[in-house]
Length: 409
Ligand code: SAJ
Image (tube, rainbow, N blue to C red):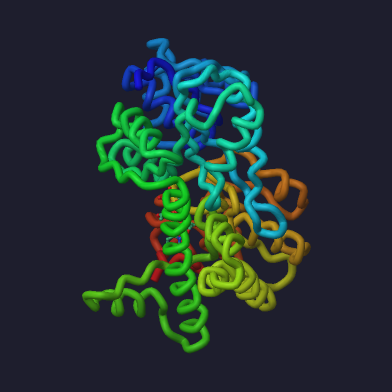
């Protein structure tokens, strides 16, 4: 099919880079977001979050006129839906953002459009989106639209590179839809295209992240066991990984982000009786922040009155500003509640102000690294940001150190 314009619905961590890259490759792209603030920022070529390399591409796309942003769903030949799929309190997927995107698209299409769902979704969500569009448009039939799922698999922090080089799984509701989606992505993607059906594509994405989650849970469980047995877990893993068929991941303060900490629940929700290992891994990783808190509280018992605690890092992983589902942030919030007598000095070089969940506590403030290290009785390393990795161990002074990432061994 001939695609001369693409509407990207949702200008977040995935939608915005996708829109910018598409436009930078000469495709007329209209980005849509419900946030008027985000839309205004994008139209000025400004990036509302930190992602290396994005600003340059966005500025180029906006100034050349191939990318514009709007708060209304545009008319376009193809749509890419990149909206959030959070989970509910019962760990099932909340499809309301996909449904809202579908409603907006349904009002604009005339037949013949390609509609791609990129949001990570539970099995059946692409069919659900198509049904929702067709229910709103009884004048159209299933044969009038091409619908596919093409999950994004880029790593935050490396999005601009991986969006071009990663292989892409494309699951069509029909083979024609998968082929049309492949043709669109081939305008910028240099990876291999792997065509399948929508349900398998949905499950493939969830499987990739569950694979990571299960393996990180193994590392986290090993770290708790090793602590009990007086063994350095990082040395242990390094040694075991010398075996040609062993490749253990790294323990940390827990698993965060909007992907690995969420997606496995969609599998558990789809097959609750069967997904036992996947559920246990989620629970193991979710329990890790509490274990770290226990260690901090233990250190505080001997730290005297009004101790100062330096919390190094709030982001969910290294070298980004993303606090979503961050175990480090969770640890800071809980500690603020549970240790009111302690002064918490949060060091997060990638943010300018504390999120409200922390700012509301009078015993927490955002601090610079030098001051935090100078004052701290207890130093807790939560995120392996480069700037912390470069710290010589001598800078830690006499403070009790709890290093959840093993950078100062
Ligand atoms: N983590 C560990 N130990 C490790 C690796 C990671 O504790 O050995 C923690 C991190 O600190 C972080 C969390 O896991 O809290 C997730 O970090 P990550 O870097 O492994 O992954 P994400 O969530 O940033 O991105 C993942 C990627 N998926 C896979 O690697 C299979 C990415 O490719 C996906 O596109 C992304 O999820 C997504 O959007 O689903």
